[in-house]
Length: 296
Image (cartoon, rainbow, N blue to C red; front, side):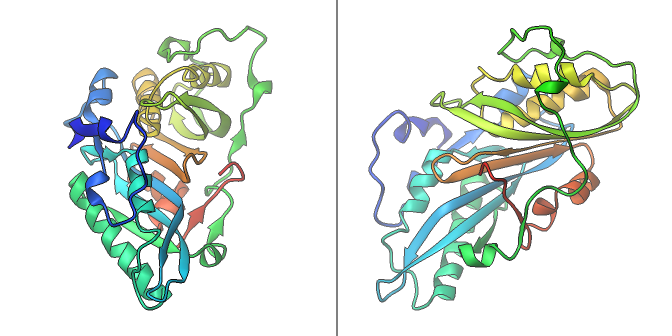
């Protein structure tokens, strides 16, 4: 299945008008992990991948449309990720389908079907939370839990930035210990398949005897600007670089990417599940809490 990725990519593909689970494509995680020194047999992190799908719709049996936002959550321990274009095509196949007599029936049908199909595809439990836009407004949080310092251009030294491909040697020690907790909107990479730009807000919590300078950390993040990687890979590469370079006691890296094609992807990786429970309530309490940024 993962070898058939070109059956939807690099081609014009008509949106299916009937239920089409066969259009879903999975991609192995292992290749990028091996290439960047991540032990695939004993991962140095735990984590979750949250997908927010904003353009999901189906029909009542009387022909009336109902619209939903679907959140999809699965563990980073899965061997595969779902390819985003194939997921978009799959979800759009419900647009002209009659799925129930009333909105709750349609909602339950979508939740059951999407969870089942993605769990089969990825060979791991995939959870879904489905809300109408009106329902979601009541459970929306505007930012992750905690106090996050904003790291903007003013944290950079006057030395020109020249590296736009991932370079771990950009990371330099500050000679200080303690905690770094902040975020930056300087993250930009490109899609591994199409090379289209992907924009993200990156959040970092790090407790270590040796901390990077914020200047070098930002330069390292900016070095992804011309890299072609999936969102999940970018977060894992940043985690692995900081983990191997500084051996922190605690490390959390999470990103909130802007939507493309009606879907945004939000991975989080940490060396302790307690960090996800504390700073990622949108993951730990995913059925009841949603986080959405203005850029999304």
